[in-house]
Amino acid sequence: EIGKISKKLGFSTYLVGGIVRDIVLGKKNLDIDLIVEGDAIKLAKEYAKEKGYPFHTFDEFMTAQITLDTGEKIDLATARKETYTHPGAYPKVEKATIKEDLYRRDFTINTLAIELTEGKFGILIDFFNGLKDIKDKMIRILHQLSFIEDPIRILRALRFAGRLGFRLGKPTEKLLKLAVDENMLDVAPTGRINLELNYSLNEEKVIDILMLMNRYRVLHSLIPEFYMDEKREEILNRLRDTIMSFEMFFDIKIDRVSNYLLALTYHLPFDISYKLLEKYHFSKSVKFFEEYYEVKDILREIPEKDSDLYKKIKFIRKDILVYICASSEIELSERIIKILKKEEEKQLLISGKDLKELGIPPSPLYKKIIDDVFKKYLDDEIRSKK
Ligand code: CTP
Image (cartoon, rainbow, N blue to C red; front, side, top):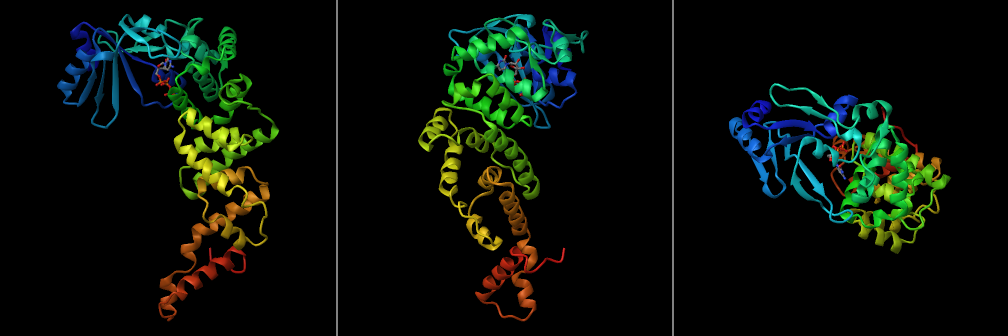
């Protein structure tokens, strides 16, 4: 329908960006981005009014956003060229053709478009060999200055390479290394680095991405005195598995970003990590780091009895226990997880209601009895019926 209105207005409209790449790859992606050769705002208004959808326009950027009944959003942008005034800056914008619009993008795999205009609906547009690069599993930039104009693309290249298991094309690899050597990441806006690292650290293939960031010295560029060794690699891998176990067992969402940042910086004194977190705006992680440093020595001596170990860890939040588990001996880590699982079952073990039914009059003793039963349960002196 949007194709029909587009035709009527004399515009051409295309589905573009990550969603087209992911359609080709057979992956899920719900970000609908449209490019309009003509006027995106006019098209959005006409379409939204006809369908009764709410919409916003951003005149300065020649873009608009429509909200569908399902709550999903469609972004429409007028085809444009961008000129960068200086590296990393937000670009200046001018109207252009679809080809020019696609040419300003980061990688060939992101330049595919599907025409939606009535009469041409469904035609795949591939000016820059994106389809071939998807087939060949290659990340390639479109022009020599890509990483210099937008250094965030250094991070994006490695994120896509890790996520999709793709390699960097030879010239792309060379130019990426050059941009890293020229410290281009130092001139990128720190807010955009924050955003991009957040995405990377939440990716399923986070370890692959971090290993690429290590190989291409991106981590060194972001974190002074960074080094990768076997120990850190082991912690990173265990962290990934431990996060998954915690999320499954306890049905919670673990703060991945803070955990991985800690694994990358644990060798640094706190004041230096703190400055890094501030610099890249990881304010939530500051709190996490502080809490971790407060408790990190708590397990220097490991109690023999599980009930004593429980006393030490019961005030530590699970986000942080994840890190403690991943960086401790396997045996301790397994004990902690076992204890936390038992804690989950505490309510099922014995309740005030059970005691009442046994004819014990309600009193502060209840808590003591319940805690005692739990203590015995932790130390395997009693078993639950399950
Ligand atoms: N883009 C770019 N340079 C950037 C960021 C984005 O050229 N620094 C382009 C890319 O071509 C991308 C499009 O803008 O396809 C949309 O960006 P974004 O939504 O961030 O990327 P997706 O490809 O949709 O990535 P993801 O799958 O992670 O959402």
